[in-house]
Length: 147
Image 1 (spheres, rainbow, N blue to C red):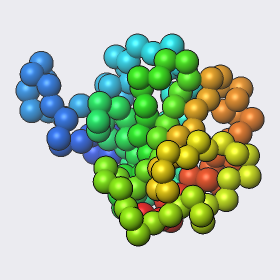
Image 2 (cartoon, rainbow, N blue to C red; image 1 turned 90 degrees about the vertical axis):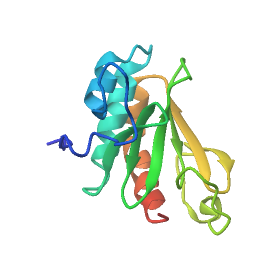
Image 3 (cartoon, rainbow, N blue to C red; image 1 turned 180 degrees about the vertical axis):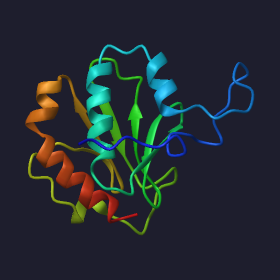
């Protein structure tokens, strides 16, 4: 059964809006109002991310759903309109001490490397996500060990 995040996992204290006052925006609220051609794929990837590890939580950060365990590791790139694109990272700042690219196994060649500690992965259809679910889950489980 898919894990459903608690309301405390779905918020980010740094995200506010004048129409909400100081109340943090939940990921559920954010996604409910999201208009994106690949919204079904975004929702499918979100569920996959939440099920990768029990420690995964989500927030709205950088104006997009963001995922973390002991640190931030994945954020949707919503400006891309032709696919559901996820940026994998080790937080906001580059980490010179980590070269994930040299250590991570990507058997499905899913990742497009943006640097030694950053990569992107994108899917155009839910069928594509389903076909690569095991490979992506394995990559994400490896990725969070670098946090």
